[in-house]
Length: 97
Image (cartoon, helix red, strand yellow):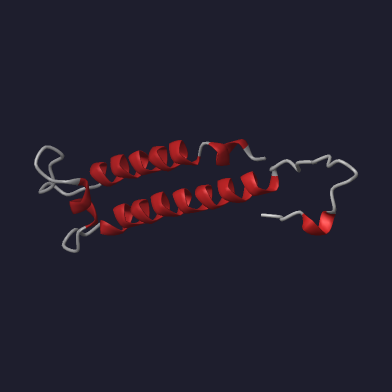
């Protein structure tokens, strides 16, 4: 298993923080991290909104793919349980759940 996918949540947050820093550094003079929200970096009136919009999309995609991978990996690695039944038990009367 690829080790990076085990830490998909950490990777998603690290990518998101990196994008926030890049978007903040490329912001025009009207944006202030003290008074404006991070979402305002992706606002329609902001000329470099695509940077933060890509950040939001990447954050979501990394989480989605990580969760899907984790669910599928758990299903693939489930162990088979062997049950030894006494010989007198009739298998057609055993209810499988």
